[in-house]
Length: 102
Image (cartoon, rainbow, N blue to C red; front, side, top):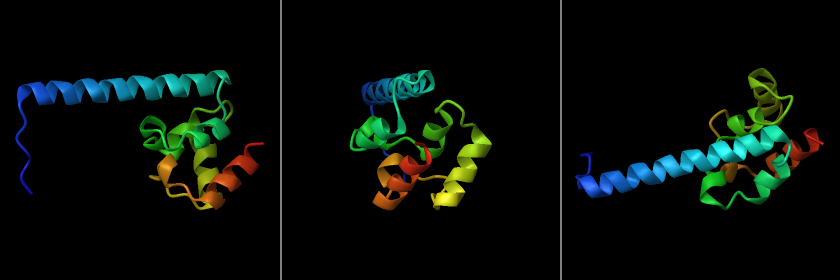
């Protein structure tokens, strides 16, 4: 499949949008690290494009007390794929995550 040709203006606009998404996601992760936002808050916002596109692994790692190893163990225990995004979580997976994180 050929790469679509875009104008320099379209490229600049896409880069600006991607940069804004990264900033918004970083701000969300900082709120989680500070304890101002919980996993329930994130799951409630899963229809938002910014939140829904985040990987579950990175969101879990943003919670206080959960690092890479603990996040992986939790995801393995619940049956969440390593590359799963927030918007792709099933209702049982959401419930299991929230139950564990109480």
